[in-house]
Image (cartoon, rainbow, N blue to C red; front, side, top):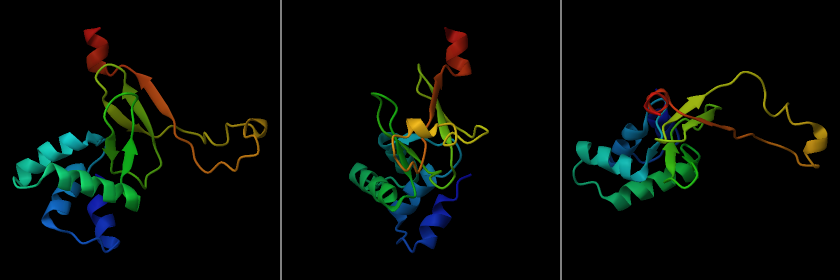
Length: 139
């Protein structure tokens, strides 16, 4: 489970009912929902929550650095609550399922100095692509 609610409270973020519900919907491991999926699940918990409120809340969480926005090609942006746990993503090319992965080693160290072109590299984002077990068996 991610610690999104605790992190937001620790920042002194005003926890309205709408914000709390959006954070609860996002909280967890391997959670990579679209804004529309967040809204659909939030409505189950708080029927009066608007789509605009969900979009605004997600935008605020991203601005705070508490949620990552994940783009997977031409698909809708997804929101990842595990912003403070270094990880990469494994994405199914057919259904779009996303899993957080933590490969061994240091990908930053794998970039030779001559390939850095004078950049001071501060981070690495890697995406592994393939087929999830369900899609692989259906192929």
